Length: 237
Image (cartoon, rainbow, N blue to C red):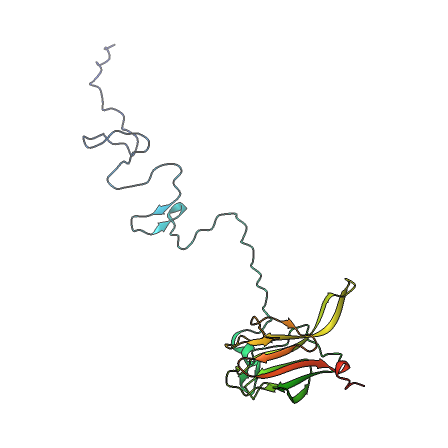
């Protein structure tokens, strides 16, 4: 039997797995966190998106993302409840506060009431009684003939100067207990020349209670107004 032939030269090594290449001189050190290849790429397990090469924001999987990204699984924001405003304001409120095209400076307050006594406003010029006016729930004084209840012709008096307003108020009585009653009050409507009560100038836009025989004067006018109810004058008898 002839002897077996001698072994031949060794064959080529096994082919490397697909995607393998021989390292070249331009390759840097290999390891986690380094980019490989010619183009830029993101690496890292935690990468979830960002801007692509074209500057378009991309989400997970390379999908384009526009607008604000909402948190996944979060509850929707609570709805904001806006309560309607039922009050009048601005031009509409001014239109409802007009008489003869003139905007009124005074509106009766919630506690306004007609007096339960018969009050009269007496007008004096010097020592002479000029007139006596019966009073309702309020009386407006001034030069604006379209809206005032008591016309005051002196040029120093404002068009809407002051108001006498009857109000239902509560205050301590002589025994210390609270007593409710309808009382007259005087208010200056922010005038230039002022309103005077018993010679003292009043602070504007503030109510001052009027007592029987109090003397009222407006601006530089010499006319005086005295408030009395008929129990004091004897007219009610």
